[in-house]
Every structure is written in C-alpha cells, then in structure tokens.
Image (cartoon, rainbow, N blue to C red; front, side, top):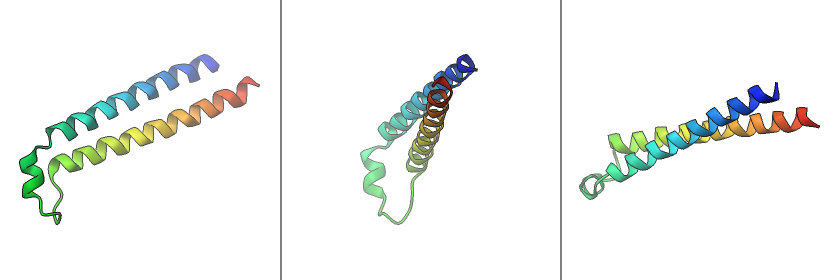
Length: 76
C-alpha cells in the first residue's frame, strides 16, 4: 500500500511541476504590448492560461499533501 501511495505522490509531484512550468511559460509569453493594451476591464487569453495553470498547480499540491498525510498516518 505504501509503495502505491509513493508512486501516486511522485506522479502528483510531476504534475505539479508540469503545471508550474506551463504557468511560467504562459507568463513569459505575455508581452508588454498585451499589458499595455489591456485596460484592466478585460482578461486576455494568456492571463486565463496563467490562471488555469496555477490553479492546477495548487490542486495537485493539495492532493500531494493529502497523500503525504495518508502515508504518515499508515506508517505509524
């Protein structure tokens, strides 16, 4: 059981890293022109991508923490 949870934890850590990199790439692709043209009233496509990637990162981190808590609970 512990081995399965460790594998799940490693997968969740990989997904967290992947989401973080996707969010950073979306952030870097946001150009100065995009920021200047945005009056603050609308949301650009890249801002939506950043938001989605960072939300996914938080979700995977939370799941990884739950798996760590389960591993600690069963390891006594």
